[in-house]
Length: 335
Image 1 (tube, rainbow, N blue to C red):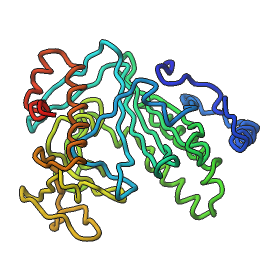
Image 2: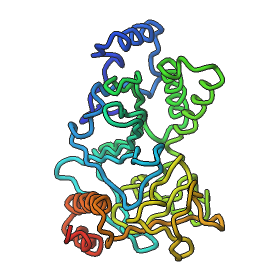
Image 3: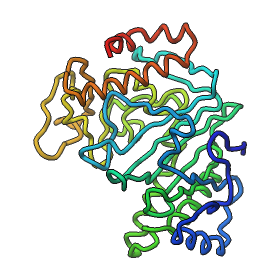
């Protein structure tokens, strides 16, 4: 497996811990000798809250909200970093929309948060690094303790080897089981959480390259959006105005956001009262379309974030490819 820059380099998984409670966990786990299996590398992020900004990542905000654990804030973020001087390739999908292929050296992270204010903390990072030869390395990070400042422990492994994928998953499960709060859960609850970790760690199956959008629920997988040529779901949708809405997750703020039209079969549907159904009334996939005419400050801020992502993507393309984004960039000229 290749070296680990620009993310913090692999090191003993518990190096640098200073909080007494976290240090005691480090000692107890180290004493068990839980070395990673062959093909799997233990990694750590010691200062997670500032990590992505510090390391030069850029947040890409899609036109619709991603499913979230919170009804009033987006708790899932997408952060991307590409090497200086590299270019993102642009093509058109079967529907004529822009789709992307990221260059070697790219890091793409799905970052999940929990909580509010000073207690808001990262609870999960899942990401991909594209290696020099175009192969991919997957990595996962989880918190070592409930403190928002606690380091994240993680592991990485090469995509494409089913046996290594399975070994990485079981190693992750063992490490999650050894840390709070999972370590203190009743047995039945703990096993349910760990089974969820196993299911979510099927990275290659969930992220095939150039996977089509679902035209019917679960046609190609749980996620209704399709992937780009690098296997990423969200970055290409930053360039679109209309995106399928997902049915997974606890909440989807798109349904009640006045800056987003929800459409079923081409018809605009009113925001439902109470619990959001997550599908159209006939069970088909709903689609969210960003409105450019809504004047509320929150809508304007959301559009500005989307446009920042569009401009960043265009700036990392060849001049010829960037010129193909004129229709995506035109609404951003007044923002």
